[in-house]
Image (tube, one colour):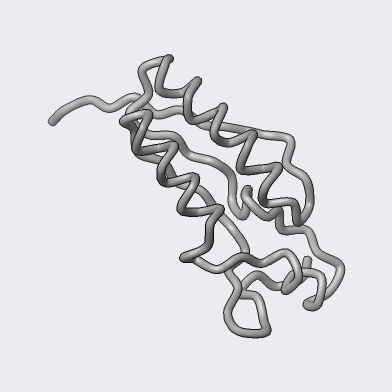
Length: 101
């Protein structure tokens, strides 16, 4: 069985600011790749954050699973030559799949 190197990224995300968080994550992806990681794991709902006061606030921060932020994240991971897991609040019509906390 091959041995893989796993990096865990803890990043100071901004609530509901996926573009800002994406910029941070691209840097983390690059650092993980330079450090020799095969897999980068980011926290639950890291891209959008997940502590919302209401369902409406969660829905306003949600992004589509085919959205530009995730495509950009996937492109960065592909360029780095690693694999990654990232969580986000997924937009589903007028609602989010992330409940308020």
